[in-house]
Structure formats: structure tokens, C-alpha cells
Length: 98
Image (cartoon, rainbow, N blue to C red; front, side, top):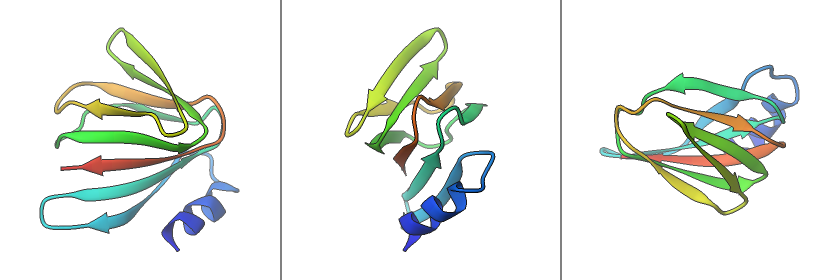
């Protein structure tokens, strides 16, 4: 149901929509939905994380490094490193933390 809720809320959203899909004592998995052009501004991760693209295409920026990720691509996100994510097309991602 969570993924469906993200898609429904995304229809009228101006920013990416994120919902917790699964949570345990030492981890959390979020679903993040983007419409083309939406961006998660620069921020840091407080836990080791991994971004996995389920559908679509996003641009992951970490410092001067820029990586385009397509469906089923993934990237590790280090702790305390500034990064951002921008949707190059409508996209759905999983973010695993912990």
C-alpha cells in the first residue's frame, strides 16, 4: 500500500514524496517518488545508506561527482557526505538506511 500512496500523493506534489516501507531496530527502508525535475536538495546521511532506482532515471551528485542511475541501478551513500538527487524523469526509488 505504501508505494501506491507515494504514487497517489506524487500526482499533486511539488516536492519528492517519501514514505517508510519497512523499519527495524537498526535499519529503515523508504520509498521515494519523484516527478521529472524534482530534487532532494543537498543533505547528509547519518547512517550508511543505499539508493536503488526501481523505475525511471535520477542524477546523484556527491561533491563534484555526478552519477546517472537508471532502473535497477544502485549507489552507496556514505555517512556525513553532502549529496543531492534529481529526477531526470518520473522515478521511484528505495532508500535503505542502516
